[in-house]
Image 1: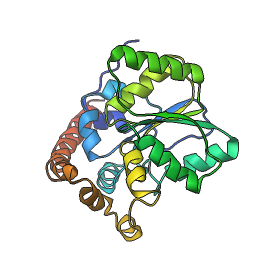
Image 2 (image 1 turned 135 degrees about the vertical axis):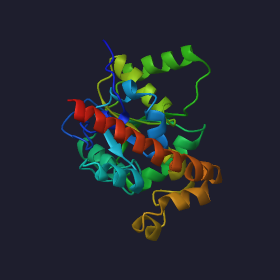
Image 3 (image 1 turned 30 degrees about the vertical axis):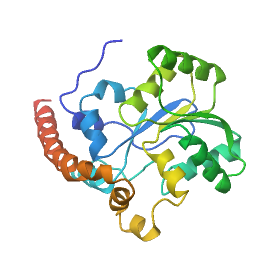
Length: 244
């Protein structure tokens, strides 16, 4: 299949679906925040393989609304989409496979999730590291054969997107979500990772810096870079619209 060419990521996102269609059993869903936006700019053809692109984070939602995109914050955590997915899985007896983070983290996260969703059907879990490409390919083949209804992947961008795309390309036809740091957050803080007042005031980023100090570079350097490159992409997108 010939890959589409886009002048900018904004050109691509303007017409991309940003809400999950639960009636579709086969669907790939990923999420953008200001940090992953920078990565997605270099991987537009990859995220084009996803049916739905959700906007995670107040800053990106605000930026998209400023250019006329109707959207709202959706993230894969317990303040947003995760409990909806888990509730639907329990109600409809859908199986879920979790993969991502360091060894032991997924298991600990699942134990805490099942306190709140005891009937959740977990078909399996695995950490997010592979010895080599052959190890990865073999696991993808085995997972496709196991055929869980839902697969949730937390490997960081773009590894998690590549994994879900390759899983889909192998013949699996389920509902796939990327989840970023959700497994780590749930393992370390439980299903109520963010203090309620911080969630209400959209200060989740501040709590993440407190919990993961390594993220300070992302917020102090990468987020300002996002604002500059997003503005550039909007200008390019506007020129594209004028030429049409």
